[in-house]
Image (tube, rainbow, N blue to C red; front, top):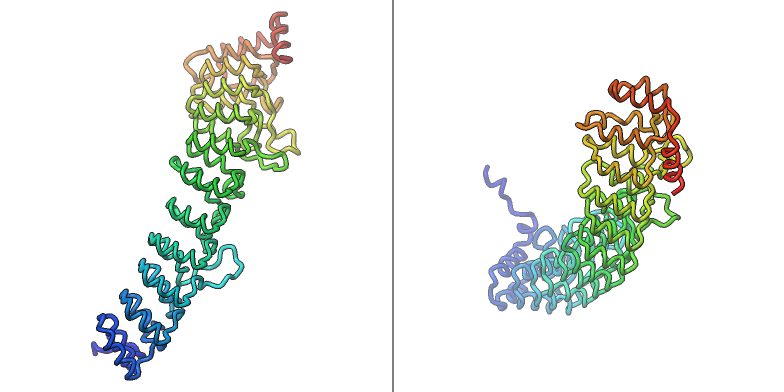
Length: 446
């Protein structure tokens, strides 16, 4: 009863001589015994089980002399088992360099998977010998296969060979033998993008650029159309960013691309890195570029929890960033304007900073005491964080800089205190002093 669960494969029962040949090879018996089995009827090109030929067993055991004997007796060097594994697959996977060399000299194919033309072909039971050698870190075998014509651009489900390696030495090996440095993986990234996003990726970046990688390659919509420079900024490595800029990386999207996605400068601001922001601005990043989703660089700097906010804002404003830039959610709909920079800052931060507001006002940020329904630049319905702050200084600073009012909506406002409402209504009902009018005029035109 128990034996029925441990039956020998049918091939072994019907052809015991093949099984004996395989077992002898596994035991690495002297070659004369193998010759006797062959003389008695064992076949070099008949499977033992599951498509495995005697040559497979000899390679598996790294029995070089037996491999040579079987090849001399006519063994099929390209025979594959039921999984598609050839003797070369086995020897490449395990790093048997001398066996690989012998098989190649005997005419072994280096590429087994048919080229279907698919960019990302379906996964099969076995990869190419080159992929197996690289995956298992057998450098000598990988080099030997490439020297004998292995395709360095073979495509797999997740990309080509170069998209699947991480070690610098294998990256250089593939590039040396003609791998495409701009090949994209299944997620749409190039090797240079992946190298640039690593904080310690400079050696790989240098190597890829040396072999002609495109420093302006752009990812697709899945990655917000990020360029190589975007990924370098995300890494925070100033040297990589500087290198890419010197190699011609574009700091702004081309006008032909109406993408509305964050620029490298936006990402640098989000990281809160003043040195990186300064580097990009000095290299030519547009401080007034805008996105219908996140606004201008000033909008980004005014978002919540931005490190080194004041320093970055000061830098942007000095370089000409417009605090009153109008950014629309939909360029076809002029009623879908994003909140102005000042309003964005006040609405997004629970504890607005007086120095930041002073800075924005100094560079001309407008204060409109209206609702955004009445005026897209209105600040009246975004004062919650100002009112709940510990000091009235911010509120009265805004009142002092205000240039337009909506008496009706001020009276209806339930956020400001009674004292603040009275002061605001009094100011709104009184003609502005000449000094205020001149100041507003100068701010408007200068």
